[in-house]
Image (tube, rainbow, N blue to C red; front, side, top):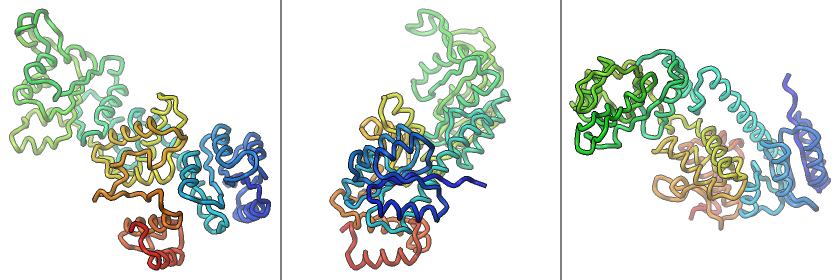
Length: 455
């Protein structure tokens, strides 16, 4: 039987404190009550808790100070803030300090119950994500790749299978999906892991220079060739050569690469000697090579030589459930590198990240998080820390409420946006919002009588 979650409640209002403790105890939680911020921190130092509910305004240590110190004592514990003075500024301040959510006084017990369940569920999922990630790393040896979606699990399985083989692999996927990371995962899980992995960008150099880079050249082969130089295929001997964007190779280089795959040997530019090479080829492309073959732009025989095993990396928009995991990974990486206090995302920020279509895929997400960490000075990233492009809808209209809106207007705005995302389906919208249909209908009636908050 699962042990009940432990809730820590801090409020200098004894009536509110006793009421919350009684109601949440009846819900099956183990409740620890504290009459002020100092007492709250003493409890947190003495025993682990799963969730904290903290009043914003208390004598001595206020709610914001308690949130910050709690994060140091028990990192990762979600905190709900209670306040009788809710404004956009105080809400944003609480979220920036690290609060999971905020609730206004006088509070409604049904709302408290829903938000507590949601916060505990988010914590449980975060813990499961970390455990699941460790299991995947151990099972499939895919430390470089991130994601727990079904699409990525299939990628992990295929990477694990082909790593022990010596066959040629073709990795397909849009720009920014992580093709090089997949190639590295294959190489470092293979018997060739102790030998070089050489990455070759097939679009980086003009054809003449690229041929010399790939195959090497003899002294005097062309103007400026003052000495013999080994090419990248030679330097990767015994290891792996990763040919990125192979779909852009010229017909001449396609023919020479085909010969390498057939003969396992090369000739340097300007040379006659055939030099054997023991190298595994992993190729990647963001193009449809089958279409390129049909168009006559890519050799069919080379395509079949490369296409022994194909791994297709899904675009980020097709695995949006991986976005929070990826975003948190990048946040921790860049916060650690910059020695910043940033440790997480506000729920609204994750909603923006999950709702964006990410044409640049994982690379674009990484850059967005890197920028947010660099510009933010708080522990929790809020939507305003993200690039404007992410916070705008397809028509260029802001997806987020403005700072001049009241809290009620923000709630109306959010309900309207959720209803829009649900295609007008009120049952689905109520499920997303975590409320019953009756509450949703009351909110919509109030919105109709007061007008659209966007106007």
